[in-house]
Image (cartoon, rainbow, N blue to C red):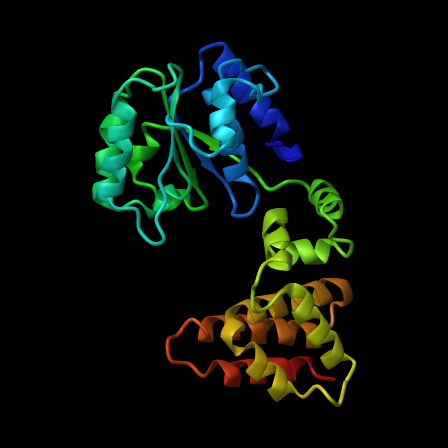
Length: 295
């Protein structure tokens, strides 16, 4: 697996420490959603499992690499759950780590959404983090470090990962075939390139492209595109639409310093707050907001 370019230095540092036998057994990768923490963890896992690793990563040729490529390495375990990660799942993972590595190398336990662990699950993981069996590595990933129990935090080494630079993200997206990649598109997804990629390739109901096209038509005074039509069409994604409108109004105000843009920005802030209440008529809130943008 190719390591994402903005994590190349981090990956190299972690591998150097592993080769020098100085890599902590419990790593917590934390940072914004959509920057590739999971890909980094997989690249590290692949190297830890390899029989002939180098500073560049796994050899991709040994028996261990072949098993891992086939998706059935006996010493690699991923703990995932659709909602919360419960204690039974954690105990199941710990049990797999307790014996000797079947391939005679390392054992790796990967928890992609560590912040979804219940308190009981986190407590069950503590002993393994405190006293791991030989050649065992635990890799935890989170977008929300404030949701991780302090006891878990204190027993892991944190790798705080940042958003890539705008040029790095745009280069990545252009290489992936996103020809209209721009800073505005990046900003719509929190400057996280993998969120952009996911939104444009996935089955999401609304993408920034759809939003932008709709707003441009609205701003141009397209008589065929009535505000109510857009409000109804976008009501299932009302919160996201309001945030994108807020971003648009903010950018316009910073450029032009016009009172109308500031008024729109304030309306967006109010709409975002209103939409947090259950039972609110989302279409009506959006209608009122979009009217502010109509010319």
